[in-house]
Image (cartoon, rainbow, N blue to C red):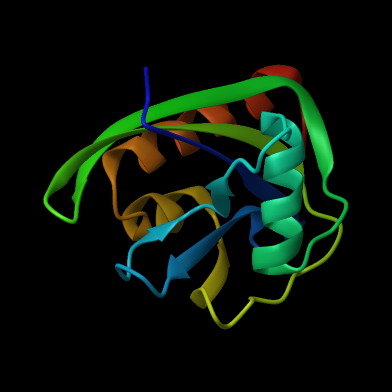
Length: 142
């Protein structure tokens, strides 16, 4: 059983360089990943992901891609205690470029897959991105 549960989104759009994915650089830790955050009481995973995307990157109504979700599990140490965390990532087409919430987000970039893979800090993020891209290719999404 995880100590913490969070939810987020792998956001994509069609850009000048083809399909691009949104990556954010978190102020705490300085790592590159996807918009995500903890579930609030009474909130399901999808609702939490939608709220976090609206709050962190200013994209209030992304178009959810049905049939895709990816669970990432990892451990880290906080205040000398081991924390087990699970993050459910959904896939969605962005309905705008977004704008970072500067208190939590240091930077954000839309990148094609090769650049996004090299920018993501953790292997779990790279695996999630590869699965999302494979899913979109199988489904015939542009």
